[in-house]
Length: 69
Length: 314
Image (cartoon, rainbow over all chains, first blue to last red; front, side, top):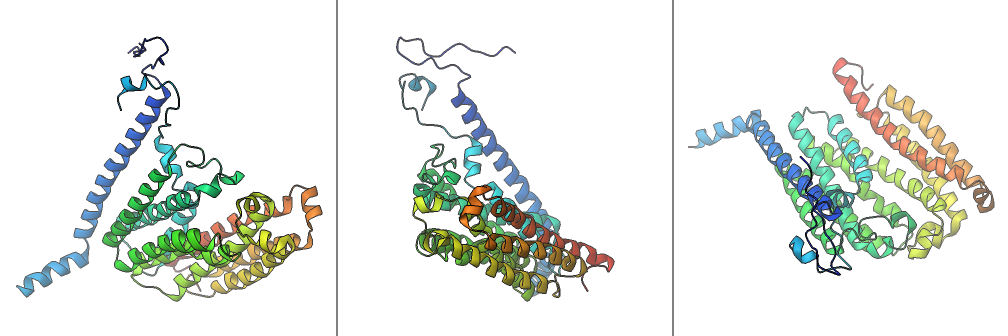
């Protein structure tokens, strides 16, 4: 798709700010980076939970709790 | 702020940092050392660790190390603007503000300590918290601008990662993990003093009391050789402990011979000789010091990797 290049501001003495301004690239990089980090963290917590609950020590603790009751 | 409002600001727009600028606050190159040595500490420990828990532990040790780097950049932004070596860091170059660096550093520090504690154990989390405190408060805020022994004592901060990795796996501190700590602790002074010799004016202009500034360059050269000899004794002695073995011993003998020779070469030179060849010997020693540390910890990891086949260790 052809990129939309129409400047947003046309007033005399005002800066023409196209959609491809460098600031937008930096902002996109920041948003993308944060998104990837957050998604990675969700996956990490899930994997960590699986690792913890399948651990032998975890089963022993739950058995102890049952015995206590 | 909307895009339309920016049209009215024709000058002095604040720079909007991209993701890489924030990532640079975490000192990625230092982080590679932290990741590697923490991994070796965890891997060489005499217990098996779930790979996912091991990965999470290394990741959050690295995040904690990176967070302390961000806090160091926040505190040292004034001198980073003066020193050539640090002028391109995110704060001096105007890409990230001091406040942002502080917020990221504090948030990631707490986050990393909590996550490491939950993933492994309280001792590992407490050691990580102490490492961050030591690097930011003891080294950056206190020692660095006060004493020429800044690097000697402050080097402890960079020496903790293998100990934290070991603690994450075993839940304890042992002779082996203390030896790995001491190896990095003793390696740090000659490594940084070699750097201080060829980054001539930087520390002087910034008013940092490095040994080169307070005691002179001749004395620094003498200090390098003394610390290198002590380091060599320690590094070769480590070969005969639980984390050592024949392979480690071979690597240690070769590299320590090269390192001691390098320190003697530095000691025999004066400033006129060094300036004449652009500090080539000092730069070579600095590069060798990087190889030195990676090779020693690589050999410890190899010994641990060979252990299941009955080949590692003595």
